[in-house]
Image (cartoon, rainbow, N blue to C red):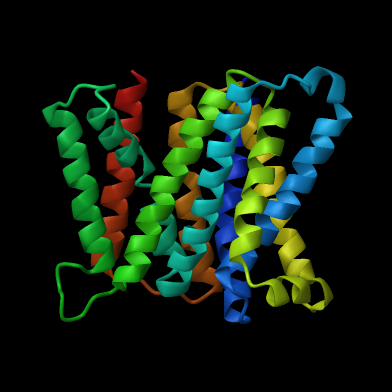
Length: 289
């Protein structure tokens, strides 16, 4: 059981990577990214609420701080899911997943602005490394033939920013209440946000469509089961280790896209992807120490 925590975090990251591929399949079938995100979170909410009810007595610990931080986490997840699928639609699974993992850089920049951390040449070097990786991955060095559209890159980076927001909100809220309570409140807020943004007719049509199975699978794999694995696993795993093994997600997403969806990347894009993942991993290890 020594590596049980690490194993659960890796499993959660693999599931998140697969969920990107499932979302891409649904978008190819004509479904809107916001509707896909809504169902992913809504099915996750059902899982978390059930988990909450099963342990209602020990989970009931409500406070205003818990509610506000969980609300912030829910908004972060809503933005992360939505921008992630919009980025996939405009680029590819591999590009979207890699750009989303620029989240640690956003955390670092926010920490500089709020004076939570001191700047250093190492930290600015990491930021430069990630920016160079983004330029190579998106083809921004060649303005005449961009490999990835501006919207695709912007959506991917926005997913990373929202991912950082979710981590920050969940870290604060989980120190106050139980994970079941935090996830239930967060994903309830998630549903409230996206229910107003999603097309109502298309949202209802999902229930009677032949693709309902894909939506259920996406919700279970991409939210319900995976987040439960992650929450349990991270409680048994050091933060640095959890940050590193979560890098399995973009690798899984890239392999899913390349092997099953026919996505294509050239050598320069592979180099950019590798530079981003390597820099973020080094940063995570250094920050953990």
